[in-house]
Length: 258
Length: 283
Image 1: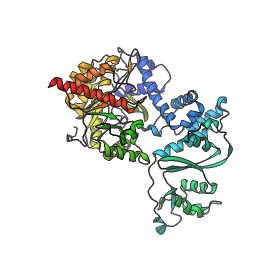
Image 2: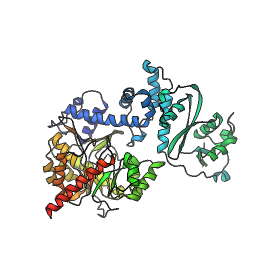
Image 3: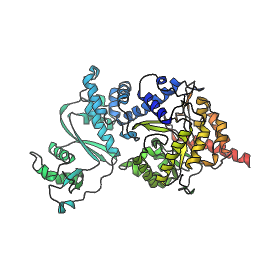
Image 4: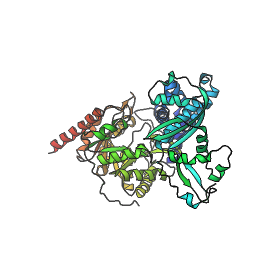
């Protein structure tokens, strides 16, 4: 049976994505002295899915440590089965893991005691992704002299990120970074305005003033200075503070500003 | 028709090098172990910011390097990923890489990445397809690339064997060959392809680099696991191969269960000893 190149690629990748026996998909494969078609197909399925699961282990070490290898592997296996990879760069795989974990926590009684787990995973993703982001150029104030507030849009620097959580997941993350067993920590509920930054090539997480957090978030939403100025409760007068801290990367201006 | 590229090489890559892996980075950057060159996994250096580009600079200042890729998807039917190729071109320029290599396989389909080296049918259609894409990649990168033979666990019903397939691809694309001796042996055991016969059929004049790695024995078949020392049958094949190419650069690969650097250095020394023996016998 002759298979065209495209047919073979479609069949082999469908086999990797499926859960049924590889033989259902691999009619064009020859009998060879080594692995059977079933074994050969499973080698590829396992290797492809394993690479993605391994990437999740590398990206989410705190979650792995808290859940233990067996539970984490179960979660990772299920996520990989549902979530294809769309970039050749495995460091970009797994962004949706936090939402998946939140869904699992809602659905599975075994995870009912871990309502904060999704937020912890979300924080791990931020810290991981910061490591690979572009460097931020030095802040250039020149657009201030040539454009009005309705055209100027302060943009957060590439090396910063922020999130709000109702759990003290940052304490667990920091404990892991300091190699303290995070399982010994008691998670606390509250309002935590977290700021993440790549500093000296490492991710650092801190809790910041909610007003500053909201201002940074408004910048991240793409608001112009004029829009920020009319938002109730937004402390636009502290923008200079964000610039001094290095959290604002650029001041975009022009007709493309919202 | 494939573009003719100059044969001159950047940097100076010769002797037995090793693949750079993260656990060995500090040692290799601060100590002299007599390693003549390093192969970088391009996909580990894709980040444009943070520590990665600084590390790339440090490596390139200290060692001649080559760039080994896994995501060009040369045999795939999806369009070539120009964004990926742009990054490869950037990294190669930054590291002054002597050459760039990837695999004779496909890695993506239907917009999805599979992060594995998936086998192609050894057919005329595959030859035309992959050779055309290699030529496009070479045009984009402005240099010849080397394509590596891969281990396989399935074989599609098609008229050619692997050696004839690779020879035709190299000829049609005017590319070079990265010959992985371990993969030849794995395919002998797994697919019944005679490795010695392959050495006789492959275009050895196009071999730019030789790879050596360890496999995992699963009983009925072998896995190209890169998690152990080079096996004895592979050393034997290597000794036969280098009789025809004493000066080809050789690389020790180890990707999983990475051992202390000393273990890789010992493997490299074993390769050097075999090359010395073959040279002495030929003198």
